Image (cartoon, rainbow, N blue to C red; front, side, top):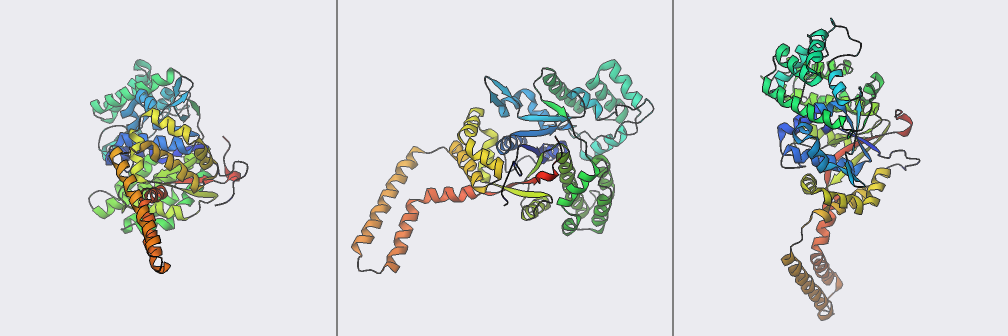
Length: 455
């Protein structure tokens, strides 16, 4: 790993793949992950880990107004679970990048371009927070793109932004009413939180073609071909490479047409390509927000998306470096359920290791952070403490006896016996050392200082 000078390679701002609205939907669908026994505790664990790894977690507005898990948890409980203590107040560890001045206007901006006229069409937008099957969500997104702006404007003028959009989805796009109402209630909660001044919004950077090119080059098309099973999948990959600047809803609609669920191999290729495209798409967005990208390792160890991340950790990021986050996987679940006061103590007690990791990405610093988490999460059993102490004392006596009583025995024979006794007496410490080396929990792309976009 190269030396870090003048902040090059440091992690101050982190953009998280799993906080994207599509990725939140995936976490919600799979439920249990290495980060928790359910989707909500998983996302809390990921937020807390991102908080440990960086000074600021960077979100986009659609992660808030279209994130199914952000909706389920809600702003009040979210603040209690992941809020940072500033004096006597709790604040969100987020900076929200938005193309509008408020969450409410961002909700409207996702559908309607600011300069659009009444006869223009709305944007195609797939609401991942809408609790309907995936194919139906995509179809609703496509129908939105066929609705004229004046249809939305008329409803917004009469009912307000969130209610106007909800009515449009039901009346013109065929969305079922109850899931739309649940989504609207979540919009209202986050909009009110924003109006109360609790959210930090900054102007969003727009994706650029050059950023797309760089982002897709980190996960090259050539490397993806080995993961595909069908000729149709390879053809879709070639189209995606040539059309990497298209809207994500358009790409997902094309993939569903070309790679339907009717054949398992086609469906598997579609999932492989969607995960790859989404990671590259979000990497480009991270570049535009002046942030580094982290992608967590989720799902089945045999799954293609896991293999892609393992390839990523072995290859340097183009124009920067790749960092591995190695943590005990059994520990990560603790992060999602740990009381906030305990997590605050972890942040304070391990501030030096956290600062060093953010600055240099030193694996030793990461092990220091992991040790702090282990100390906070482990619950020692008093009965085991007395038993371990007695066992250690017995082994020390045995070692001393062997060394003294068998003085004529060659050391080549005594040394292994003594080594086993010492190792056995220190078994808990040795176990901790191996736990701290951990498993791959995430991969971070840290861009080169000279290629970072202005913030």
